[in-house]
Image (tube, rainbow, N blue to C red):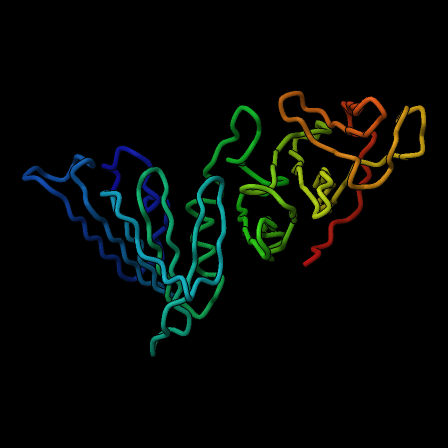
Length: 294
């Protein structure tokens, strides 16, 4: 498999403890299959002490079918969206899971047979979890979330337009929700990764919209191993800060994190239209220990 000239996820799976490995490559042409542009499909199967796995790769652009009725989860690693569905049980294994996704123009289908429901997530994290890079704006493609490299993201739409993102990581060996973002957005809330306090661990900064239309900013940080959630804290009755404000209702106060300038903005209504307050540091952010809400 090392002959592949791109990034093949099958190369990232460790087979050291496997008792049996089978590799099947289908390709076109008469040459020895050293040129990946002639590859059509690749299937890698491995058997371990307590589970079996198969990773199918399609290089011809044909995606694998998804059993929509049995989809149990949709997760995201960087920009890669993965659908996981449960297959029929077998006499040998209680849990049969499939994960279908596309990565680097190759379509993948991962199948795991196990008694451990976390098995498929662990394999996905091994091949995708710490594989992305931060782009110029710090948006998406995170190399880590709050210092945790092996992370995953679930994306759920529980009502039209209302998106819920949950970020998971293994904390002290236990899978735990370390951040939760929700709100009305198309296609999803804006999320950025920036080191605001200069401690070497990037905070997770989220622009969200409530059902009232109010825009709010939430900041998650790793404070010495304690995950905290923060929000902009201010007094709407402070006339020195909110000069000429005409309506103090929550729906009329708009907050946003501006990635291009690495600043926070608070927009409030005035008789002449609106005024904007720019916050350039963390002095106006109030933190408390994060608790998963739902």
